[in-house]
Length: 139
Length: 413
Image (cartoon, rainbow over all chains, first blue to last red; front, side):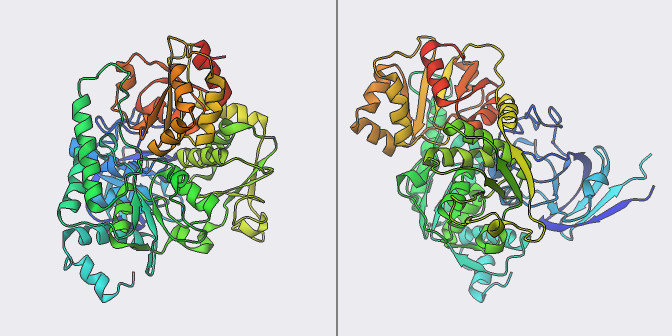
């Protein structure tokens, strides 16, 4: 299978490569993710108990408290942060958090990018140019 | 963005570290949302000015801004702080938390902030006018300012509100633009809502559906109280990343459904909210497995004087159950108001506490467990969502009256 290339807008710069963690549900970093462990603690969330640490997170949009901006900064300090974020819509609270925490973030408007990527896919996220490569030829 | 030569110099660091940092955040947001230009903002409301939310890295971040000559150019005030209630047994790190909280307030004071320490600044005189551009963080207050006051603010994260306060301007995107303030989904309310909890339940339902869109409520008949609108705002911003809502025939930008519909030709997708949806949403917000109640909390967002008066009217001459604690959270200004009116005495005589400046959502993790609190009763949808996740407690969710009864009887009925 060929690699899949997605185009978006880099809203916080940087380039990383890591495994994808995908959800079609919005996520609240404040109260939804434990900054000490990186675990998703929202019991109603489809990714409950999954760890975001070191992952490139794909989800539609963030939600909830304005305190979420600093949550990413704390997670970077604790070594529990995701290494990249891909959203379908930009929430200023999370965009701000990604910028001050230097976590690459891309927003893809249009299409159905969440249907193209699965949890565990190896992803190269280049937020400098807004290009996401999903490696589908892993053995 | 089209940056003026001066803005470019600010971004390149000619005006120092703090201005450069603030500009990096603002230009980053502006480019993300295709903003062409900056617009002046009249006030800012900060959030996350507490050690639990921002942690040591956040403290370093704001301290560096202040030490490098950061000064707020516009009226800027603060959100609630971490207050560990005296009545509880000391937790080991109490002194450390208090010290960190003091550091944060000192840093913000130095930058020129007014220490309102409330999530309802609009109840104590921070009241932007219709059409005025502001930069408000605190998700519940953002929704209130846009929806009820008709002021214009995006959902600012803590750092972006600081950046706007330091520059006195913000990129013109999102809620600052008239065309972005149109509704995305109609919520047709088919029942009579009674009290703050019903409005919170509606808000949670709507926020979940709207996500980052703008719900338009129809079928709500005025009058609706300030407190109900406050609760609706908070719940919308908990379940989604809602910036604002409209209530047709009530909020200032919604004379009719057509006037606020994004798609004038096709109209909006419409979802019904009646007793069935109310009950289902209440179930989502209730997690307690036993009828025991350890703690009853009012004031998420902070109570108004009328809410405190209402609660006090039921406590007059009664006692809170010896197994239960009762907290009423509000600003210190409103607490003083309640003291002047004798309401504070009624509540304290009954065994309740009015906690000025505090917030249960920004207590150190594990705090309630360490105090033996397992079940919390509340009339706030926002509190229910965050407490369950942040403190891992169980929640009884229901009307203010039901919560008062639980405080007196010690049982959730």
